[in-house]
Amino acid sequence: MDRLRFGPAGVPLSAEERSTIGGVKKVHQLGLDAMEIEFVRGVRMSIKKAHEVRDVSRSLDVVLTAHAPYYVNFNSQDKAKVEASIKRVYDTARITWEAGGYSIVFHAAYYGDSTKEKAYARVRDALQRVVNMLRDEGIVIWVRPETMGKGTQFGTLEEVVRLSEEIEGVLPCIDFAHIHARSVGKYNTYDEFAAILEYVEEHLGRDALDNMHIHFSGIEYGEKGERRHLPLRDSDLNYEDMLRAWKDFRIKGVAISESPILEEDALLAKKIYEEI
Image (cartoon, rainbow, N blue to C red):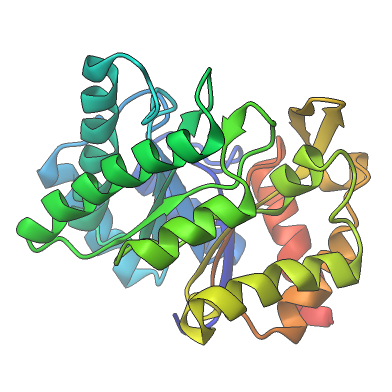
């Protein structure tokens, strides 16, 4: 990736045309340069439409990512649910690739009654199958398990980095708000933000820092972790130091705002980042 790009998770709230193409055009108009397509309720985009999205996004230099449906659990005891989960992540990757996308993100699993090691093995095996399916079709796109905000959810920093070490074509999606919430208020100082990036570089190399997929927002949390996303200014997230760490590590890739005020916080973060 050429630089760190900023954009919203989904069509900007201020876009009059409520479509992916309308969103891309609005992102460009706002001075942002990335957008995440939200397939969270299901993958519903034709190949023809994906190619139209690709052409518009490339002409406007807006990099696209996508979020897979929420209904994914690679650690389900129900084999049919695991198979459906594999298909949802595969479908997301395939159509995002057709749309010229750079990267997709998904929520991998819940621990349920499993040990964490058993859950890890099941997630790894399912994710390897997704990657194999894509590779067999010549589809090249980053597939990224996300760091998650609750202790019941698979997705610690260590787990998603370990998956990335073991499976080619996989890198983590680092959600700084989720890490902050899961740790019940930790990971909120410059040194702690830097430690996250150091961990990624130590285990995955400089290439991982040059190809980041980040989620950020403010966040409300309790003893069990994440409750809901908040605007940056309405939360305790020390976002200026977070952005300073990103700048100091010269990371590249895409930083996606999942704030309730999507593009406002994407623009706020971009402005602060460029002024550091």
